[in-house]
Image 1 (cartoon, rainbow over the protein chains, first blue to last red):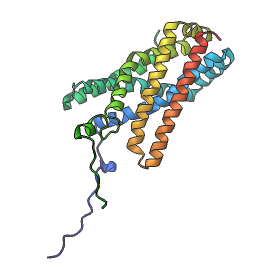
Image 2 (cartoon, helix red, strand yellow):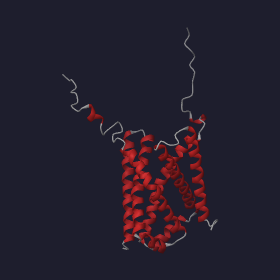
Image 3 (tube, rainbow over the protein chains, first blue to last red):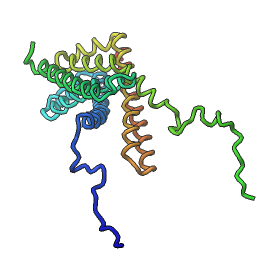
Image 4 (cartoon, one colour):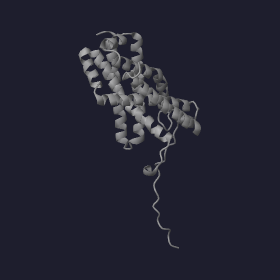
Length: 132
Length: 132
């Protein structure tokens, strides 16, 4: 008896050929948006600190926030907030034992994605003066 | 001679309180409690931020922060928000940092930084509230 030829099988999970699903992508995005929002909290604190430090320092922060890069970051944070907010409520519903079947997981996932995107676009349309 | 002395604790005492997670379900439960509290608090804080940064000015923001109602909600948002952020980051670190020493150090660092920023934000609110 000759020993069977050694077959090099892929290791699981093999991320290069792993087909992402809505559920796994939304799960990691919940974490990523949460981590991003954690970085946003000190900026909220910075806003309060300059507010307490007088008009001069307040103007400097507002000027910094109006820089295009910060506008993109603020847009990202708005989306991260609404996304984490919606998927957070989805997590609370799961903790209550609701929508735990495959159908419920996918439908609540699509609803959370849709609502968070709509809210983000709505808030920025208002900020940019596209809607009165 | 090196016979292991059996524990004098009853099996019930060993399973009560400290499970394999070391603090039972305390961490998990606090994440849920803070997330429920953040549903109204975060919406209020984000709405106030955009209202005064985009559509208001320094004077409108100061006037808003001088109201005890606004100050209470912002103080709650800071306290609960940083608690939620630190506990979320703790789980992310526990999952992805495998070196025990680095893991412990980064969790402690996250908690210290969160506590410092939370206190800073709270003092800024109090300073504006009392008009110092």
